[in-house]
Image (tube, rainbow, N blue to C red; front, side, top):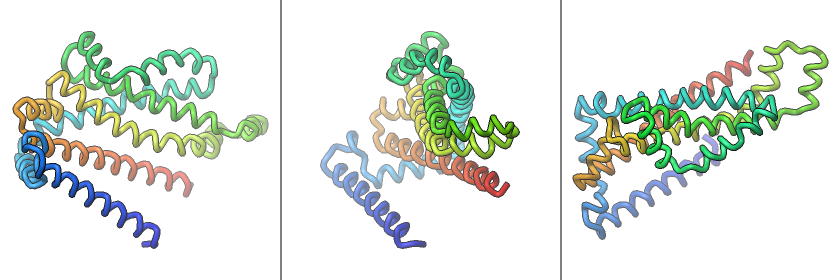
Length: 253
């Protein structure tokens, strides 16, 4: 381990300890219904994780909503992003819709989709897909703009095979913007899923959070927040691991 990496990890640990200390001090000053203590939160977290039905009735529906919505967002964002990256007319035509989706508060979008689609998993997946798709779309547009135009014209002039052009020119230009966008899309998908589940009070972690808020069970609320953060980290870590393996395999080839 290099000194730079060790220093980064030490500072990360110090920041985490400071955050934990601030949480503990706030719990001493505030009422337990306002700020739950770390100890009571840990007890609620253990109670959640030791319940065998908690995963299947609470966490599992949210994971399904997150992954399905993320897949829908990737299909929409990548599909339209490829067209917009290749054709400026398509990008100009889609510009008003992109502005609407990126400017509209997510809560308003959830309310509208509840009115149009009703309460259920389809609505939650649609919310995630519609509002996360611009993340992939903008990343692809930025990636296509970074492609060297002279090099692209040269590959066309020498009639380079499309597969080689995709592998050695297009994908290396798209990866620097697409991989960070994917991590952002995962975080946004989780937040939107929880928001849609809270506002619709249908199922999953959002419904559990809304129930804990209603009954002022702040320790359970904080424990659920930690579970959501852990879920985001797990999905990010898994997708990052798959992406890194894919990139290393592509480099070896």
